[in-house]
Image (cartoon, rainbow, N blue to C red; front, side):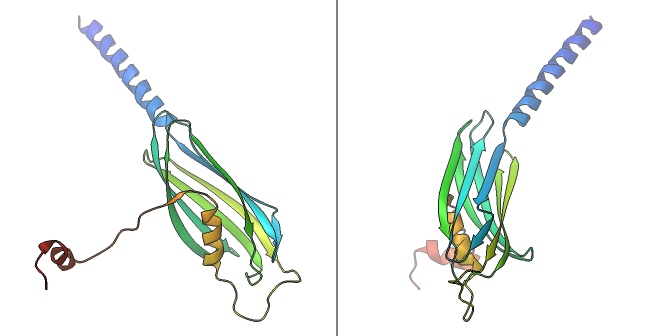
Length: 181
């Protein structure tokens, strides 16, 4: 009898472990990103391709972080977006973007990180180079990189996440107290 109980326990443990592993391994968020062409000129147009998908069996809530790096030193962002993905759902976007004439010349990296509600993570980086052209504005203030990031982020077609407001305990009490001050 103890031997039969031991075998049933081992079988139950094996089934529980395999069910837990398949549930953990199947739910994952994936992301891909591309910029074309790899060398862009001022006043030119580039194309961005973005894909975000759920390759699991459960719905996911996903936070997407987008940042832009210039010459491997200055990172602007991240902008935070959100998405809801049903099982095996794919969100795919392709868009054009404009390269401003006063954007600093150099190497850029657009980085997209996705973090899902099941703790799965994915990251994609698209690198491109901006070179001068006849419309380059050399004198004057350069275009802020945040404007370029805003344009690239908007082309992803995702919802902006809702910001949180940090207030003191006294401010919260005044808001809900109902007594005018």
